[in-house]
Length: 460
Length: 124
Image (cartoon, rainbow over all chains, first blue to last red; front, side, top):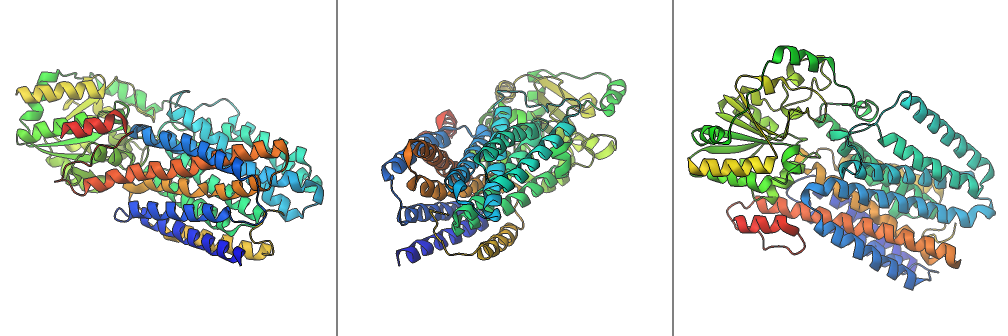
């Protein structure tokens, strides 16, 4: 009887997770969906305490208290710009937990000659969970700039990774034959190495896509653990995340105009391509403007498109950007924001940042709406973006970003770039638009430059 | 194996659940606008925190200091995944909600949101 009630609770939780996913995929029901998911989770966890034969409740409750004390403040205090690395680390700890649950269960059963399929379940949980954990930690380090965000490559890297994969497969085979704990621990260690090796050559704007993939890995690891424990709720939830995460990864890479294989194995941006040097030859000089000139240009425009990018996110300049838009509105200038799908650090990230700065919804234009409007804009003000406005994606077939959908800011009458330096963007490709006669550069930190522009516009 | 919730469920039934869930996972998010990619990633991230159920079962059946320590660590990690995931997703979605009512003042200052929230509040 008690077991039936527990199982019904798990069923309720599983339905909650499905509703959460559905809610999260449309703007209307997103927040409610998340709350339904959280409620389902609470039901599942509560029911687990009633499972027959459990003891050590003091340890469990204490550990949950510690977890809450770490997780809630971390999630509440993280800056909106740092969300991607926060998601990465939450994903990593989930993967680690899945691997540890599998190992714990295996070490108890090792002497009892488990069936082959049971060993497979354990090995899958350990392998995928560990890869997800160590991969997420490296992704976190890259986004947090503890280590370089650029792809790290060395000669023969693919071969080394492939060899690592073969050794791991051999170990899985050995584990099947002997069901020894030592084989599992060796597998754990090598999987951790594989996670690191897998993530090192992936850099820059590709890291968020990678996190989405690792997220689905953790889901699959949780599902494998569900097989180990004969728990349907783990299988349902883990598989849901694994499947939807895979699809989401594909959608993200599509928004970047690239294939998943290219993102994972292409070591994108590690080489400066030939097209870069070509532009250097034909490009000529760069025109740097003063704050006053640009302020006047903006204040006397009819229509200004603000194109926010990664640099705006890094400089935390979303609030100042809105101040500038407000100031321009006072001068009777029509302002809209042109948002590239992968502006910021991950798809949709820029919308979150601008929403945080209370930018009115109707001023935000997705790429499909923004591109027809850009030719009518007097000024396109590009704040810390580069690759997503690089015309090379349209007209330079040799370029690595060729084919990526971009915002056509080059069609506006004037282009103003707020940029730290002439350094190329994540993709490592020169941008010919920077050398265009109608382009004016304002060098410096995005937030500083915007603050000065607000003052300059106000003084006009 | 021990600590099972459905001890007599056959492996075939579990595989059935697995495959149907995979199809459901694909179907349920067939198309997502790119503005929701980040919250959806974060939301699914929270859902796989359900590993906490497994962590509790393993810890609840642990014997000896070694197993208990391992269990403790596992429960802590899984809890961070669950609560962190849901809280961070909610924070993101809260902001999406406010922008659909552009005429209204921003939500009351949320504690713990740091300088950004204050700046948003005072700028109004």
